[in-house]
Length: 308
Image (cartoon, rainbow, N blue to C red; front, side, top):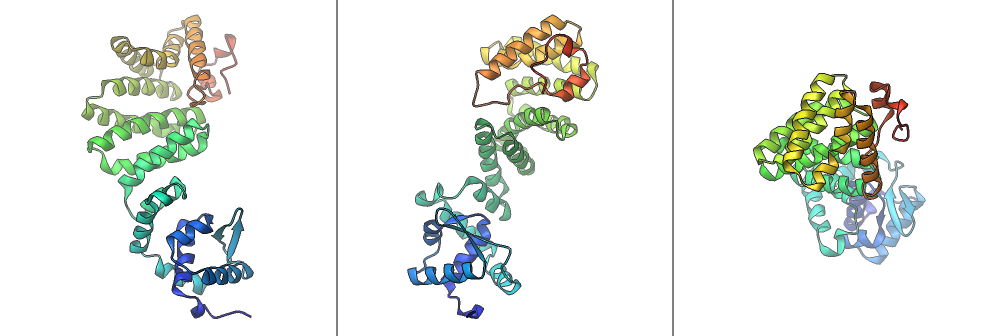
């Protein structure tokens, strides 16, 4: 027999509101830490919700709300999930025994809902880096995208400027490799250049120039590309440390190619590929996509393994 909605207790409503807010499967032990609820109330709620297909059970012992929830219940839950409710939930999720129990993506989404974009940006940047290291390029692209969007509101803040620069460079790599939304990259790099200039960050400014050169190649602007490469590679030599010299190999290859020095270009690309293979935590740090191969039509005369 169906029971009326008003027979749900306050803790039962609150637990359903938590599930709706998190919008993901939640282990029942985590839910009980977030909402004080008696064992009898919990059993009653889960049985009723499963019978009505409001809950979907995930193993082991995790639940999420389904699309089967009727409209009156949705309205009730919407009234519960106020900004104050969500803010309180975010604070609870910072507690040591709960912090690792709910994914960073959920916490980032909650911060965005609250308009706490600066906090969200730092978390989104962290998620993007972790995804990149694990080889999940799609997720990394999504979260670096989100990070730069959030950070755009805080440019001029030293901490945000620095984070924006690193996120923009990663996003430049990822968009180049994926071939998606590459037309937006130059504007992004212009913003990153301004942020790096405010920071006096010569190293990042050098890398930004190299990235600009690569995207100018993609846009079919070889003269602009050569200007960016010449300036950036000159600064790479002046900086002179092993890391930036290694990171410049890919761009040196493009620079030599545009000058018609094909053998030198091949040597640079081979060194860049070897470096990428030695960095399993960054599996997509170097990739020669078919999109660029079409811009550089004679590349195939010399080597093909780089082309996706």
